[in-house]
Length: 180
Image (tube, rainbow, N blue to C red):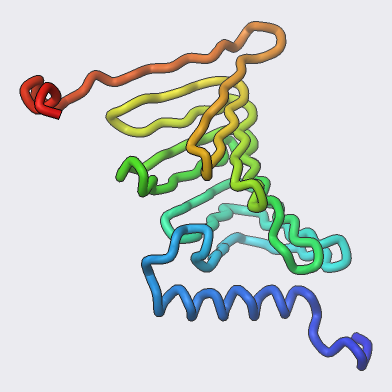
């Protein structure tokens, strides 16, 4: 380590996460995106110059209500700025509480990519997203925009896998629905 550079980017990243953690503990009403990120895994490899951290073995990432699990998770953080999280698994899974719907949203795929700048999630390979009691979507690829609350699903290019959507019937009594 050079004398003119006393702190590594990784150290600064961890300090930033720590300070965010202390701030969020003082204000638990922050949105998920502003909560600290906590990661557990069997192994970690960091390539500071490339800005890549790779976690392997029973990886679990939590940020607020978001829980992401996978066999391997790669995090791109050039210059100490979190840009992309890629979770690989058989399957990789996520779970997030939607403040808009006041319900949990779950998903799984062979690859889950979360772009922090655009707040988008791309699920690839045997992908599915469900909101228990409301709907389930299965497809080869599912693209979800967290900010806009929009979703796009595509089947496989060869047509073997198509988009499948299941809507659950409402469990509210008919009288209550008519009054609204």
